[in-house]
Amino acid sequence: MDRHAAGAQDPFPHHFDTVDELLEDYWRRGYQYAEISELLSRFHNIDLNVRQIKYRFRKLGLSRYGGADPDEAVRAAIRRELQGPNKHSGYRRMWRCLKRNHGLNVRRRTVQQILRQEDPEGSAQRRRRRLARRRYFSRGPNHVWHIDGNDKLRAYGFFIHGCIDGYSRRIMWLKVGPTNKDPKIVASFYLDAVCQLGGCPLIVRSDPGSENVVVAAIQCTFRARDADEHAGPKSHQYGKSVHNQRIEAFWSHLKPRLRWWIEVFQGLVDDGDFEVGNCIHTWCLQYCLMPIVAQDLDTFAQDWNDRRIPPHHSALVPAGRPNVLHFLPEQTGGEDQLQVVPGGMMQAARRHCKQYSMVGSERFHRYAGDMLTRMGRTSPNNTNEAINLYKDLVVLAAGM
Image (cartoon, rainbow, N blue to C red; front, side, top):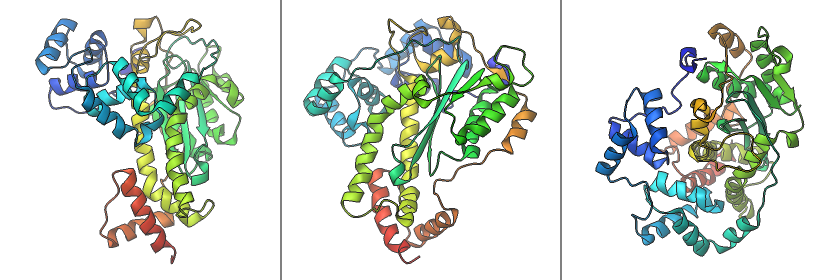
């Protein structure tokens, strides 16, 4: 099917004033010449062949090979990243971060060497880690979506929910909020993704928790009139979380990122600034830090979707970048399995969904907003600003 005929949105919705700015964005995200050419044509209506893209890169001073920036600048950037959510990242993710966030052109080997010097303990731990992989088969993008919740931050009032496409390994959504157990909220994540693509997957797989019942009902309704072997009630499959291998494997990659946030929150506990189980403390922390954590997860998901997955000897799905594998499956022999859903059915399904709030109490959310205005403060832009605001807000909220 033609995905664009289904009304799908641009998967790369960044606005740029010039073609050169767009090319520089793709360069920062590490895409290859042929991939950039195809994506420009497919999603931006810009026709540039590989030779023309190489020429423009040379004019912009953008090299495909690392080594242009001095090691001192690279080392300084790595030190800054080690102070934030990338503290536990490996050299490949750190290399992508340096290119995307700092515009540094450096070889991965150089990043690996500097990272071993700056973080010897973390590097040793990552070298000891080995993953046991099971064989996985998928016909193409949107064959199976794997959904699951992650409760690693639950002690602090932060609950994560995610979905990954089995073929492309593209993250369809990665959300954080005050709960991931409300079935209507989980259904809203699913429906937002369906509306963006213009259709639903052939199959959705989840664990048998009650939070997934509305997703299961909507998915089976969308597929009720189809005639394939997975139509109707077979279009949603329940199974144990440990057997939902795609999303479980993704959680293992997200774990180092969450470990840093645990250290941040636990630091507040150790300093006596946060009491686990205290509703006021939890709501204050959610109000101040939930948007920051959500932004960090968005960054992580975008980096994941842009990164190149290397080939593996036991894999039955192709290597490549999740965004390219998902939106250009014909390049790797895949066939898009997206099932078109009429707009009327999507609108009807929306009645069974609920948008989530960043704070567990709407009343407290309004109160905190009023307090922010009275203090003459603005919403925090980074973790340190958010923590300072949290400490001030806790004092004010104590007399609520």
